[in-house]
Image 1 (cartoon, each protein chain N blue to C red):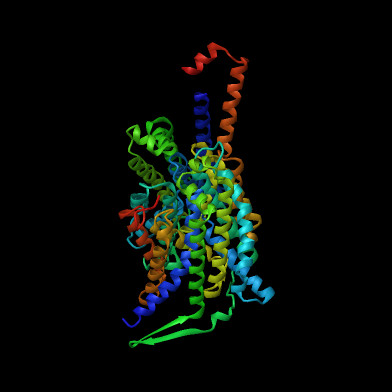
Image 2: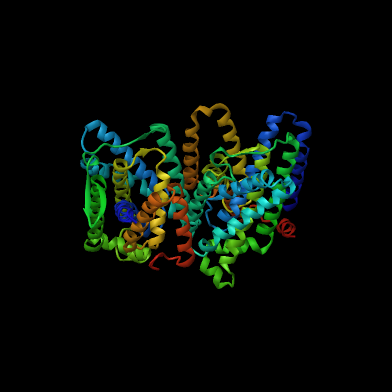
Amino acid sequence: MKGLNFRWAILLLAILLALPTFVHDTFVLRVITEGIMWIGLAVAFDVIAGYTGYLNFGHGAFFGLGAYTVAILMMRGNWPFALALPAGGVVAAIAAFIAGLPTLRLKGPYFAIATWALARAIQQLALMMDITGGPDGMRLPALLNPQFFYYLMFGVVAVTFTLLWYLLERAPFGLKLKAIREDDLGAKALGLNPTKLKMQSFVLSSIPTGILGGIYAYWITFIDPASTLGDMISDQALVMVVFGGMGTLLGPVIGAIVIFSFKTLFWAYLSDYQVLYLIILGALIALSVVFMPNGLWGTYLGKRATRRKEKESTGEYIDLRVAQKEGE
Amino acid sequence: MELLPQALIDGILLGGIYITIAVAFSLTYGVMHVIDFAVGEWIMFGAFAGYYLNKLTGLDPFILLPAVFLIFALVGYLVQPVIHRVMSGNRGNPLLMGLVFTFALALMFQGVALTVFGFYTNSIPSTFSEGSILIEKLGLSMTIPTIRLAGLCYALGITAMLHYLLKKTTFGLGVRALAQHKDAAGLMGVNGKRTGAYVYAIYVGISAMTGVLIGCIFSVSAQMGAQYTIFAFFVVVLAGMGYLAGVPWAALLLGMVQSIFLIYFDPGHTLLAVFAILYTILLISPKGLFGRGV
């Protein structure tokens, strides 16, 4: 099973790497690049929401912080993009640390509120300050090289995904986070330091978010508080994670692909009904919470597990040799 | 300095409105253990209900308050079982799911409001909205708009009624028991599901009524909700989550902060100031000003 997954991953990687050589339509490449960005955002969101059990409604703020850091450093400080981009991640990490300091010691609702309020405060700040250009936003020099952005976005998301896969699914770190999610007190009794681990998870989730924001700023070349720091980014990340499956790595990826495809189609054909999109997002979250709390991928995993159990209990597939092989 | 008494009076009048929002909100958190992200949206819907009922019947919005309460209490009564379902049963992380669900409700409500009501700003006319009381004593002059005074009276009335309901009735005893310990209250014969539904209904009704009032004093628009959600959070966190007795003081403090910023500083900075205070409080005394929160 493991070998099969690995083979699929290599195949997918090869296809995605070769993609720009046979997709020449700039628009299609642009859509795919944005889709990859959303996969990265959703996976990063899931680290703190799904694995640790703390809802970060300020996810979009960290994205915007990264974008604004890159824009300000490049436009006002004349930094090269290669230096400004890591700075975006660093600023997002520092912001996460500051925001997490008082709130991560407390119960989940406090954190959800505080991050939500923080996002609004940051947006307000960006609207009022001179250095951010206020409500007019900022323009960046245009680099008309879609392939460059495709590979950059893909590279960052692939590295993030692999790193998170190792940390959350292979290293003990993921198990520790899950222990905190299930029982804060119990985790403490096991000798874990929940506050510290939660902080690590929060910072870990904010760094790729900030970096993706930075790439986005340079790629789109125009950022303003309404689009970059608004609620929409957090809302969409939440939909993707809840719909795809919280607390899994593949769930957010599936959610991101489905929701992003829907969004693209929606904006292409129904852009006159912008507010309808809000209703659909809300309804999607509500319906998945009520009827599919584990999300698409989580429900599938659960079904597969019960099917296996049933087969084993009816004695249909008990074959010791096979079982041994799988165990190896 | 001349403006200080006026700022204080404005703060008290403003804080009175926040009391009603936050008391009901805090009560719901205590009983259902869920933060309702849709609080601002209930206020917004209430304000629109007041606006349209006033247009239809021509009655004063203050007379319409009971009608608005009844309509929205019914809505809340019907919505609560869904939240209860999300948060109970064989699910992982019920608290998180409840939070996500109310957030989804808020998103949907906002979308619906923008679709139905559009982006316009209206206000509800009331007989109180014209006059104001001028006080000149000891060389100080203060004006108190009648409508805001009426708002304060309404807030005090609601708070007194809730106090009576919680402290003097069997229902209130059940509510307090549920807030203390859900399972133990169930063993003592408190029907958690039904009591939760009643509390949620009362909360939604009060929020909607307050919305009508806000519509009279300020304005009605589809995007007004988020601001009041933040204010409700601020008051409840400041008071200590679930600690009702702290709510009035925290609400008055918020009113003061807002009116002082309005007079002395840039009103645009109010949200930042609110956030800075919230952050400091959480850092120093995470259980609220009185250290009595959950």
